[in-house]
Length: 100
Image (cartoon, rainbow, N blue to C red):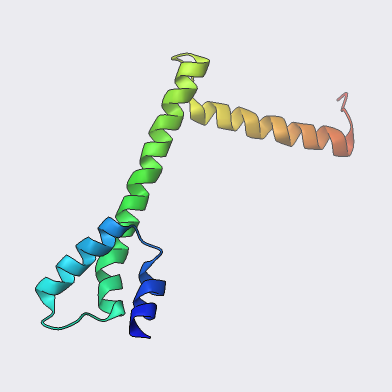
């Protein structure tokens, strides 16, 4: 039963982070680590990796957008323009055109 608990709790993490967590835990513990001890080692590593992955996605997204739209493309400006367009389209649908 104990191995199944380890499996279920640790299966959501990449194997390299689990191994690193075990290595770190072995340096601190003299006996078999509890799942909570392993999670305490692995979760910060996983969170740091998620932040790095999101940053890479942002950079790649900006680079792809620049390649597709030209070097002067600004994703923040494009987002604002897109939001305003959606807002105006909704207002136009709901209220109709205004001639004021």
